Length: 146
Length: 146
DNA sequence: ATTATAAATGCAACAATATTTCATTTACTA
DNA sequence: TAGTAAATGAAATATTGTTGCATTTATAAT
Ligand SMILES: [Mn+2]
Ligand SMILES: [Mn+2]
Ligand SMILES: [Zn+2]
Ligand SMILES: [Zn+2]
Image 1 (cartoon, rainbow over the protein chains, first blue to last red):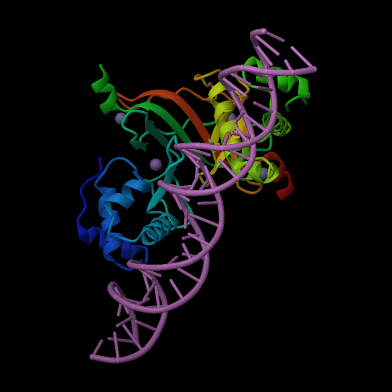
Image 2: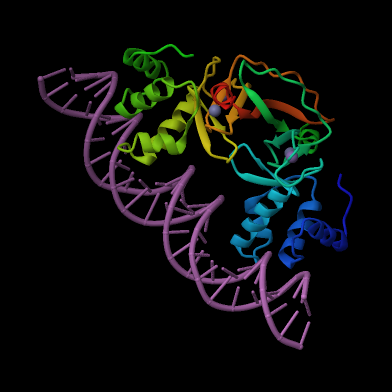
């Protein structure tokens, strides 16, 4: 669970990445840090209905470039965005963890604590990045189910 | 590498799944079986420009339902479609293999020969399906690069 | 072979997601 | 406080995917 963060810390974060401290950016940061699941683009849009769609796309893109968030696709191919926990930076993401799609509540969880087992690829294939997608029931939904 | 298949074999395949043998379906099958990489939806559309877009979507959907093909998303979230090699059937896919996205040629490879290492998830999470996405250089592109 | 029928296709309209361009506003610097 | 570059908002456009309906086609029955 992510520790709650103050506006000051979000402003620092923007400063650190040489991004101007604007209201839309602070709101996006605060929303994404308040959850322990990824945020879908449609969700983001409906919650931030007063921010222009284009602005949201631009914020997401620049945050991804800077290594603040990373993009995850759920089982339907919908874009979701999650906070980077490893030390990701501009043009160097290290989000090689498990992404869990709950088939019931549709939430997407970053399972940062799990490290992916090594994998030897067929001859010639040189892998740089990995992501393991898993689908099933999350802990909350499997608890409800029994 | 998939062995070349004849029209008769594609007709048999459609028969086996109780699908009518139509020209668009045979063309889609023949195209997808002729490659050892997944086919993106945009590619499919441009190659089969004389088949209606909606028909293509419907063919892809019914093939997926029947377990003939499976859908893969590439790094940009674009839908790609690949032949199922394991014995997939209606409503039961077994495509838990590695999907390799080449960052150079953009091809998506199904690495069926690799089995995914076991993985123990955090308490409560019950996984049903897995897919491991890897990105980097495919064998052809890494050969060219040196 | 002919016909009947259900399935598949094609077309038009629509919806959702994403990008480009440009005018206006805002944050930061000097 | 004024100047400037960056960010936002708004409109237009592009791409991807879905829905409804009329027409055509594959298959089975006669
Ligand atoms: Mn993640
Ligand atoms: Mn595959
Ligand atoms: Zn759940
Ligand atoms: Zn390649």
